[in-house]
Image (cartoon, rainbow, N blue to C red):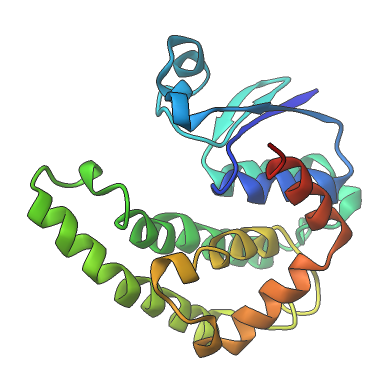
Length: 207
């Protein structure tokens, strides 16, 4: 059995959607950021990074969304969430997901997590001012170069799609106009209409 440790409005949404897409049997454990549960001794035993998502599997704990998405795709091959028989195509998915994780998500985090990189309030303010520009630059690269269409990697829906959907939901809060990126905006709208996505959002956004 898999247990996903998650918090609403975070990148854990991507793995949650992928588990639904895979038809996996899994449990959910919500981590309450408001009470700093992510820093509790109990959760630090699960993930010493004090972040979500984390995934308990029969073989141990996984963290970092690209790794978790790859694990889901490989554990449930019949769901067809990645081209597992094509090493290059699978690596392309990993490349896209790694960009979301290491670049675009980091740009987004500068809006409210400046303490990870600096200590002065003036530095935090400068980071926040840059967020609309740096996040937009990331989406510009996706829009013009990386997005194949109609899904991220082309005709086939893959584990890259819930991840892009998750981060694209933050555009407005990051000061980015989705209308600047019609491919990404259309993808976000189509993802939002998928039954599995609706089901997951209903669970995550419940009081």
